[in-house]
Length: 443
Ligand code: SF4
Image (tube, rainbow, N blue to C red; front, side, top):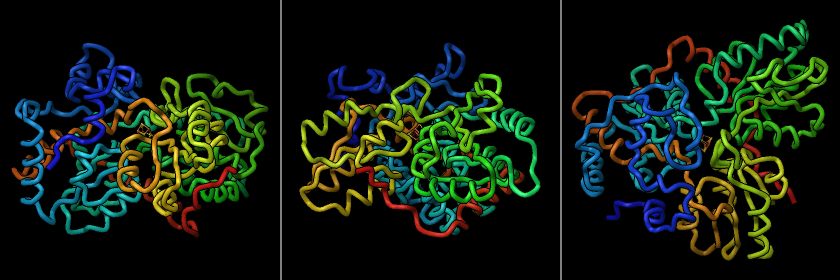
């Protein structure tokens, strides 16, 4: 049985120019040391490597030395044995962006919200091990039953996009808007909408203020719902998903303003804020936008890459995630959530060709599952989501063996009051009618 995944093999064998960072070849615990203060903490090599882990991020116990020294075969054998011992008491969730070495153990594979719902449906499981990032584990804890305990194998697996909006900053923004826009009896001056990629505290913030949560599948329906209830929407933390959705709804350019939390009034005039329909938080996934501080996965995709794919394969279909920048989404043929990208390509005819603008592990698995189609990642450089990449099999072995011994390590706990308010915002989203919209055709 293979113990090294395809991406890891490619990284090990690739030339320096073919990977975004040579540090991808390091083991993830090499990045735990900076967290103890020798230099600014970072997520580790990969698409978000230059982003800073917030000081408020939870810090885990050091992974025991024996796991760091284990051969991949032994790690895999230990995961398998612990999983078998725990049986129905355990459910392992694997996000689409995880490496193959982790995905092979997942009981469910999906995007963040789908996974949380699937775990919540497995009431017999006492332990939910979420192989994703911090906000996803929080969402699982919000939806889980009281007896279920949620574990994130590596606490340093955050999300650079979610980290770009913290509760204090959003609260400060809300107070300033309140002062400028005033209150209305009939309609809210602004409705807060948070993307699923945000902390539980921000989901609760929305729940307490008439707001709602959205996913990349339902952002259009959520914004329609919000515009029916308020004069304008405050959308956080992903500027690009907000703008791309505003474009789909025909919100004019001059009615979309960006709120930079580091500047007074977010860098806007009072008139611009009064005239705005959509106030977009200055935040992003550097995976989907090639710019420091954005979710580095979707930040990496450019119109030049799309032009190159079209030049090499005339007639190719280009599909991207809506966390990509506006011009990238506009230059693609289709855009949609990870689930919709998967469904669209899976149901495409044999022989069809696809250039995909999303995380490389997911694209590679898609290509392996459909050898009758040409499927490749738009970004020619191997650069996984660095925060997902922190979930190395050694961490999974560590937390599972601890569970077998009756110890819960790296547990994610959302307080009851935050849970209750966050549920309100999630329930508003779930109450919206209709199925997720199909991937939006651009051409
Ligand atoms: S791909 Fe970007 S938005 Fe998604 S988890 Fe990674 S850092 Fe966060």
